[in-house]
Image (cartoon, rainbow over all chains, first blue to last red; front, side, top):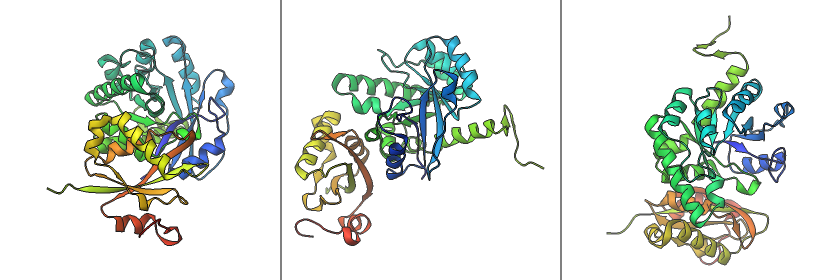
Length: 235
Length: 116
């Protein structure tokens, strides 16, 4: 079974440990690939090198915007270079704009800092049409306690229910800021199961769902896939 | 009726070794905080003392077969033990101690404390 963790922060972004430390820990925990993440603030953030290792190294860009228009501009610029584009969720307008934008791959933690779950049936329908996945943030649950953890679990469970109803793909990631925040793929899948996913779907959310997104995006970046067209074999 | 149990083999990843007492305390705190007292009682947990290998930081916890995922999550919620950052990962789940021992405690790692 191949496990992927698409949102991992090293010292290249807001993390505490170097990229090599994160890679070593991810190898030890049995991952097949990790997404080293960076926030998109300037164009230079789109050009960065990742070391070659046994793991599949994925470039993940996170867009943190204040308005939906700014989000669309950032997505246009980032799409040509990043393998995975995520949106830092939390604000309802941003969550909805991300769900309606087909260039976005993942909406991260839509419930962050809110007193509700962050997405409704309108966002979920749009996300299903545009193939935008919703992320379950493991670190948010792990590092909170008492009331904060209770509300995080309740909102995430609600998001999982809405996503299951409308067929929105779900991804579970660690959002690790330190090597000690990483967990094995199978252990992260357990939280999806406890919050309402079927066990097989929960395991897919850390394995086949991220792999499918990565593979399709890599084909598009290499010019092998467009909307409705795919090159299977070159003459 | 006899209830069905499973043996969950775990490994502690940390910079310094963790002793058994601290580990047990951390597991019970995490279980009770995450699942509550009633939820923890349904897990039917037994942390097996003489299967804890302090050198290799591996051990076995016995739990109810319907509560494996709950125990997994409670172990993954532990992020420090006595102020030492740790990761507790589950290596596997078996039906008997004999198969756990042969798969995860084999060869020169087979240094059990107490009676084998």
